[in-house]
Image 1 (spheres, rainbow, N blue to C red):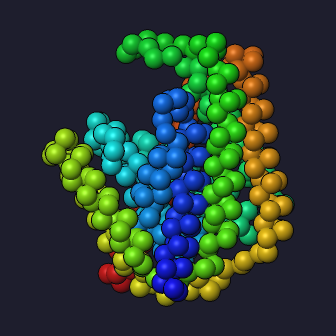
Image 2: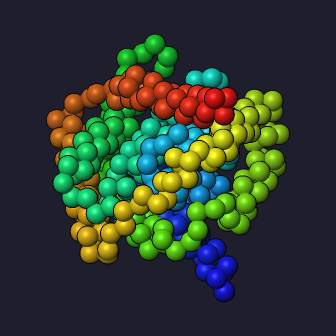
Length: 320
């Protein structure tokens, strides 16, 4: 019975993390097509994060090298497991969007700032960070929902007639955030931090899906995905022997439900208000900002720095 409960809580926590990542990597990132099954997408994101479950639970969303390596691996999977974006324009597609968005925004900001603040019951300065995140997401979506596809070397143009859809899509993202946080809160204390059967099954499913899909379709470029994953996993295996990393679990600061709920409502409300407010401001006054250029120049180097530093610190520790 204990083993069954352990698996249940592991799956529950994985679904929680998957919901947070769906919100930041899909709903708050671009126009999700109407025919996309969001439940199936949620399950897929949960599957992609399942091999790294023990990293997120033990590191408790601290932006440690292990968390960065897990986030980078998730980013590579998000763009190379069921879609071919990772293999289109190598090596640039290793940076965008795997490192520049999935790692830098969804994991570093979404999990390690937004979600961590809520799980710890914070309501003070963390709300300022959430406000800044919301304002940035509002500006980003004002670009994503208005920009038009243009020929090469042509000026960027904006179509402000179709921007109203984000107002309808935003509540779906906030709902995923709320569901994810609740699932993580109730499950994160219920199972051990060791590498368990859920992680093994998840990794096996990912290998199978890749072997029958992207591997033959995009061969030999598809080989970059297992190479990057093995590189990150090797570095993480070194990290797991680090005493500082092993002590992270003992440093957790759990809060009771009411402070958590208060923090959840406040952070989701602040994020929604700032995202919607900046979005409506820019859309209403038709202020076209090329956020893609700003994001690549800012978060591209940041994501590469995080990943490179995590790799070097892990292997340097092994050599030293």
